[in-house]
Image 1 (cartoon, one colour):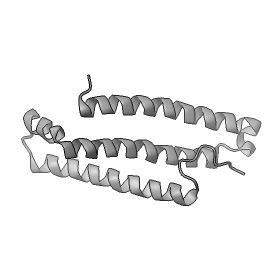
Image 2 (image 1 turned 120 degrees about the vertical axis):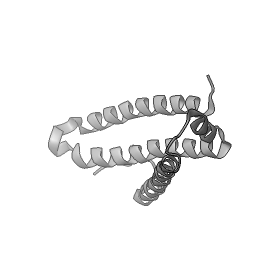
Image 3 (image 1 turned 90 degrees about the vertical axis):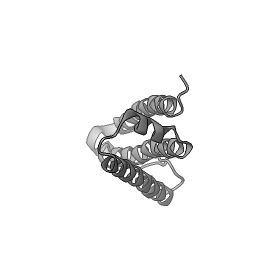
Image 4 (image 1 turned 60 degrees about the vertical axis):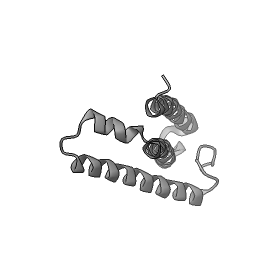
Length: 123
């Protein structure tokens, strides 16, 4: 039996809803950026900088950043609990899952701190 120690929400339904919401945010962000690039074939640094200088785009980018982390967390947790089991690796399954999640947390903290610094210009 898999414990709920590493999942993001309180239940599978919460995780499912978070996963779907973050997928919608990431899809909308990607479609917006692709549309913006297509609509500006001779995109200049000034236009790009102007886009990311607006408050709504910074908030949208931060939401996409947080959505990436949450989406990845739930996805990785699902994969690890499905494929790293005691049948596969014996008693060290929990250790392997926790180690992988710890590595993911370290990467995500770096990613978010760096992303916030880039988005909000806190240098």
